[in-house]
Length: 327
Image (cartoon, rainbow, N blue to C red; front, side):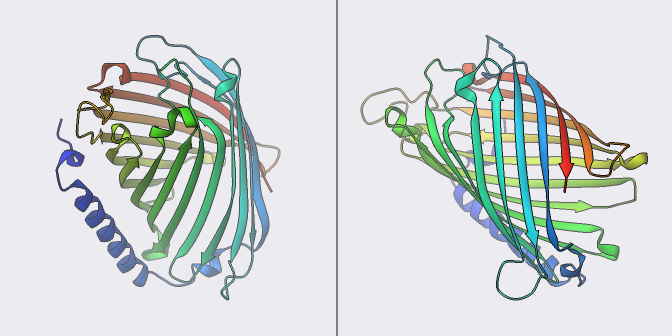
């Protein structure tokens, strides 16, 4: 498997590519049509949703497949004001909670605020998410480990071209997971850079493509890794306000573990590990016929992870039905 991440200069490649993506985005934004700020709708709006789903391999196990139902509740809201001045043009927040039918230790909640700015040439959104006591250890193991999960993200996007059919997006994510004392060596910082391009080619279809690079630094080098991901997909706009979505993502993941054992003589089980993974997402959004505020969302997701570490080769199938209300 050819893996860009496994090259000695991979960190330099990640940095260079991220700077290049940011530079290209800046060039696009500077040549974009004006009036993006005038496209926003002021006031308070948001969404409340309830989802019921099923996954056939909840533990992402190599041999023992166990299915589980889950219920997800989510609400998010935004106050949008006129885009002017130095105060945020958008202020919002999100709360999400998931409960599993037979695996209570996998239940979790996450929440956090967001702010945003809408200028003539671009929009900036900054978010923070926190999830306490979240089960994060490799699902195949029999020992549970929990971490406080912190996520900070900044997303810059701009619409440009004729009738603003093109959208360029650059996103930076910073993740920190702080594990409990028994698994302190797993705690890490991770940085992710993503650049995406979308085009409303016709009234029927919007294709999209993105590239992402990420690096992880953990307390124990056994959990250090680098990753490259490519995504292709499209949105299909159908009669009666329906929308179909299709996404395909390919990921090359390399665990950059320098030695087969750590300083205490324990085995680094990720030494030499490389993953070759892909995912397929599809869905259909159907507006309710009796109101403009309610939408039914159908989703199917498939994940397949091939790894040089045998117990981390697995696949999952997941389907869900979500009902959302916009206000």
